[in-house]
Length: 497
Image (tube, rainbow, N blue to C red; front, side, top):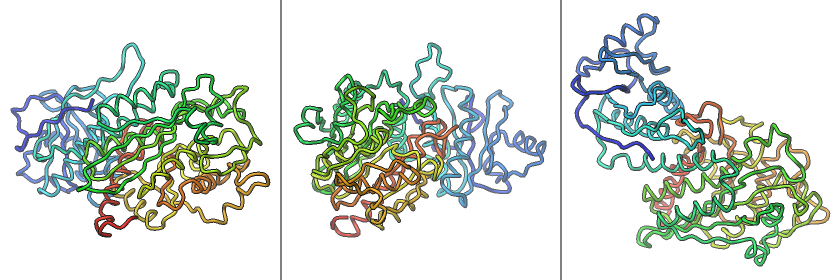
């Protein structure tokens, strides 16, 4: 549950009883007298002791106890900094207060009217994202969720419903991703999704293994057949809006490997630890769907979740197998730890059959992308140049930064097989992130498509707006991107992408 927001038009004063206060200002060399800033003498004394100018709190927030015993944090936001930098500074300011596990935090924003809106949006959204607690299984949890946020100095008529929707989607993605693998099995995952679909009025459909065998989804089956419990499935969720609002449809596709052993090409312990997070792509897709629903985004959405496990067993697929995907493509298996692209292949083929206007798939797909980028950015691959350009711009605007990689046709010479239509990958994985995207392109027909390889799904001590290692990267980027796509559709007067 996210904290309840209580808005106050007026400026905060000394009569307000509080224990934790966040003071947010635009960057400046001095504080205007009309502000009557809480704890201003204490702030000046603190900075003087550290030999720091006032503007330094735009680089690093500071905190101190007020005379009434309350903990106050002061931070300035520099409009010339990137959105990512602003989010990072605001997150660190919030953390100084959240470390004490308060039940409520008061937020006071100052500046011109236009500045106060931006500062309030930033402060409230980061409070929502980081005030909620991710699931833990400790008998005595160390952290308590934030219950209330009081905002002073600015009131939004819509109660920041877009920011709240994004936070809810991000929290859902992170909350699912951290669940232990013995708890979030494919069967249990499907049940959770079914309950969520009922509460959000989404149409729920699933393709069981028996149905997928009948459809000829040999790529998905190859991965799923190694599990003793045959509970893998492709889940399809539909969100539909009134035709008067839009007839355009976006397909979201997510990789949902609930645990990845690597199969017969078994991962060593160092790399198998944490593989319960290999379903993060599906969690992000689900988080995007939730955020789009809660923010009433005017577009139809099909969400396809490929849910399975990659286990080792006598029945598991193996190197040199040749399998046939749902669209008839034959695939030579080169490495059983490149299973994600196989379950995505059949799921993308199913999504493409519906002829959506755009397909976006999300996956923790390749270690080579982490080698290339680290975990501060995620990788974008697309079959449309204009989508690549928009993806980067949206990454800058949302604070979830992406880097575009090539998928030129000549890369596919490395996927040529002597016995099948295509190889699944190469044994050598130096640029496997590019080859994986080239492989996936075979299953989207000529529909506009983006593949988001989530190298930033986990970053130590948080990233941008998010303070936890598991970042939920992709939800906020996607909401910004979908709004941009809607703008493009409007300009094109209804033409397809």
